[in-house]
Length: 488
Image (cartoon, rainbow, N blue to C red; front, side, top):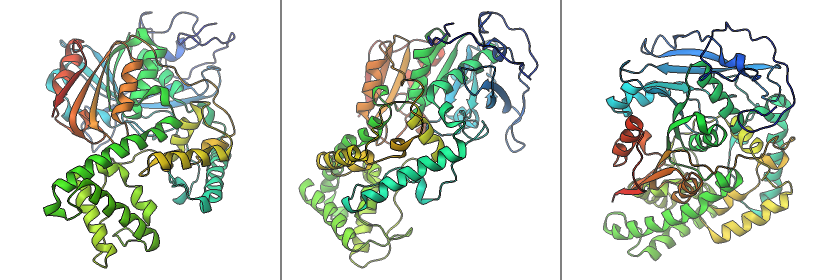
């Protein structure tokens, strides 16, 4: 039998579904004989999500198979939410939303995004949030990791590499001991399949979508697996699907170097105010002298002393030149005996559960090397090429010791589905180069780049010059005639 995502499986027996069934028109449900048909016919029981939230914010649970290769087997719940379209007459359909991660809970996105969307968009769409499988209220997983074990990036130091290897092995072992029966099924492709069950359960022929950060990859995977079900897709701060996932971690380093160079130029132009150096070369020397000093004598801050590697780990802040510069000044003063410096400036809040991050990163793809020495070589090479952050993304990760290789290959995104990509020029996480990779994979898409835009997120950050293109696309389905650059 061939599933609608193109995967071939043997004949399957579908067990009884415990939710009440209701008839849907064939165009919105799954085809007769599809083993997922009953899942698409669930009657959803909507209720108020939270007494502290507006009454219009409703929640429900959608039952899905844990293993789509065995839809009659174990089942899990996906928590979804909605705020209905403002106009029954103008309503176009549903707009599913994902906040990124992987591991980011999205159940509250309808009420969080509603103020950021213009009235024309809110009138046309039911805003649909959901916690992806393994996250939040959707059958959450955990690994019982300590605070130290939750750290995602480690600088490469020859003398501590064996300790890093032990950390990676411990995280992998703990996750498999705690949730090994579920981990193989916490993947992007399965989350995309969950979205399609949600679509059918909502009685929709197609879905529109807003995805941020990792959510852009999830959305792109959906367009590849279910192109006929994809309507209007907005991808905010896109990742290159060809890099999933080790390439994504390593891919931040080139962008960090570009942002660092831009910052040295900005700080030099503002030397009278900050005193870090009159030329970019002098500013660069000031920074690396600070890092070297911190390696000898950690610099006191409000959140504890920072060594040089800890200072480098704040590389994402360099895209915000006006924010990071006072922090570097404060570190420099603290290193000279002044008051403790503030904590690392917060660039993007981290709301991902570590367990889900590793489940998705390690379970999505076969690209992770198994030999620790490969990570050592890559970390040394990347650090030499990208001194600021190269080793942080290249060093060993728990995926080297993941007990089960990915059950499916990573989704190769290569289609003509319409989508709109919006991207800041200076994004420390989903770099401009990554977004351009997404644009190459989605031939039917258009991309709007915010020139000079700083930070991770365009629509989610509030008003920008890309808003008009986003509104026009969501309300009319019309993409810009060509890729655009706005701002300056």
